[in-house]
Length: 140
Image (cartoon, rainbow, N blue to C red; front, side, top):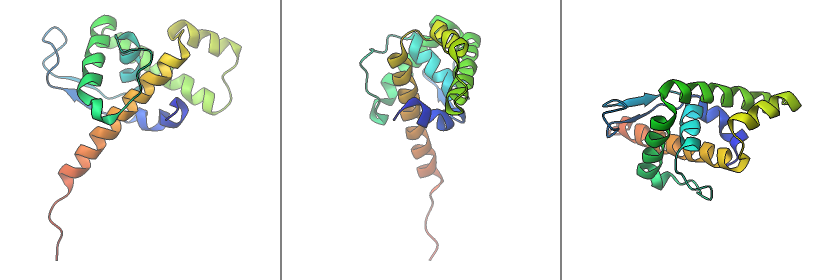
C-alpha cells in the first residue's frame, strides 16, 4: 500500500504499547499514525522491510525504539510534518521548497514509504482487533 493511499488511515490511528520500556512510560499512546511512521523511520527497521499486520510485535518494538531515539515530542513533530506533506502531495502542492524540506526530515524516500506502510499495517491490525472485540452475539 503506497503512502499516499495510507495517509487518511494513518491520521486517525491510536495504538498503545503496554510493554514499552519504563524510560518511555509504562504505556505509550500515539494518536497519530504519521508519528508512528516517523518513529519507525528513526528505528532499526530494515530498509527492505515489507509491512504485514502479522508482524505487529516487531513493528511495536521498532516504534518504541524510534521513540527512544527521537523523544515523544519530536516523533509527534515529525509526524505532523509528514501528515502535512502527504496532504500537500495529494493536492499537488508539493513544490520544490516543500520537497526540499521533506528530504531534510526523511532523506530516504523508500524508507519513509515503508515506515508508513508498516504503521498502516499496525493500524489495520488494531482496527481488526477492536472490531472483533465489539462483535457480540447475533440477536435472533
